[in-house]
Image 1 (spheres, rainbow, N blue to C red):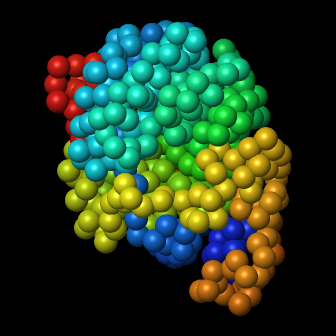
Image 2 (image 1 turned 120 degrees about the vertical axis):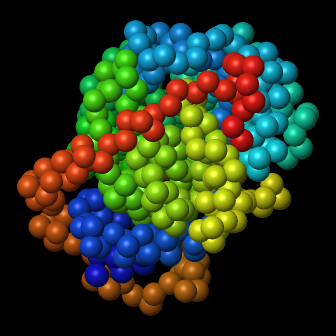
Image 3 (image 1 turned 90 degrees about the horizontal axis):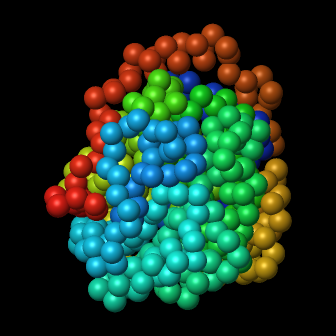
Length: 430
């Protein structure tokens, strides 16, 4: 298939696909799905081998959020029966983190609900980071605390934080449909705050909220422009008691197409399979490991994942290996650029200048020099250039069929509220 040959060639060279090519990935048929996974898998192996990085979530403060994000069980007015508690103490958070590290996690992600931290909150989280680092040598710590004010990212970095997560979630055009209490621009600004402070930026999306293919392309291309080191791909968990409780739009096949598209657009970035994988991918989760190089171990913020041991068994059975603490996750050309430095280590350059539509410098957008091309890259692209507009368009009737299959395939019984781990007296799932 000319499209896949072109995408593989571009991925091996770290070149950005066209929007038409990315749309065509989302429009592939079920008959082409395994070919698509194999093609994107080749790009994944070029930059990350068969390694899978494990991440572990610790929810420092659950529920009680004043924001109105429609997808979130912790939102203002949520009727979801989730755990609700205020800040964990540093020693409580450190014990929770230790369980994840013992299970094989290389990175601990500290998350707190809310619009953004006060300076006192940042001091509290800083003490937690220090406690975790003292007890777990070599562990990476990522903070996710909402919108950052001036100077807060620098304080987190000084405390030992390695990364900061703040997702764009959906396209700029539709952002106001899911959240009204802050803006898409607010989120972009926070990602840039983190990068400017030297933190490794982690920013991703949520699929399955009723967005169009064009919206998915918009947000992934925008992420490419921001140049985060890590891109988490979440699949909406439609919690009862939230505005999106009835949005069951995903099939396992649709999820795989989305992950493949993200891999082609972000070939050398840590693509993380995040929330909702058990609910929507189900028995096809192992195929996703050919597309992503990072997952969360065990439970999520307010929902339960599959057993931590089942995650480890899945990785081994699929022929992959857990990435060790002594291994650098990112390819050399990204790792040597410096955390949060965007393109070529220029921490003050706002990444790629926000050139989400295509381009930027070699590590994250433009073509690379000839000597940098991987040795197994094809000599030339087959069917180079964009595919036809007709190939990129999905027939409306086919979309209707796919939506119907999604309704029939929904497994609402797989949505389980977290009742163990942080904020409880029960042992965590790790």
